Image 1 (cartoon, rainbow, N blue to C red):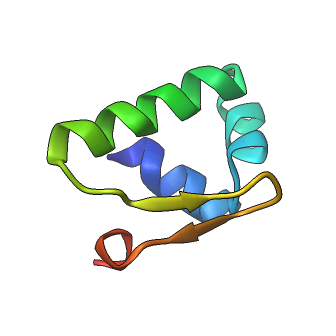
Image 2 (cartoon, one colour):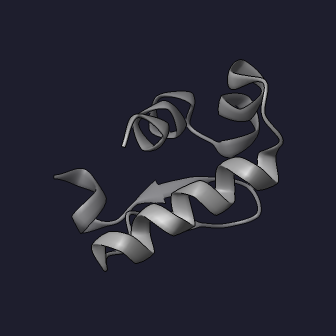
Length: 58
């Protein structure tokens, strides 16, 4: 869950991944795994930015 918070605070995967010194793809897969585990989409991803879904805002 802390990875999700870090991505939201950084307003994107690239900046969060750089801050955590992990590949962007690894961070993205971990967030996708979290979403799958809880059965909710937390982020709406585009090529340029992320937006919180309603579930992600809670």
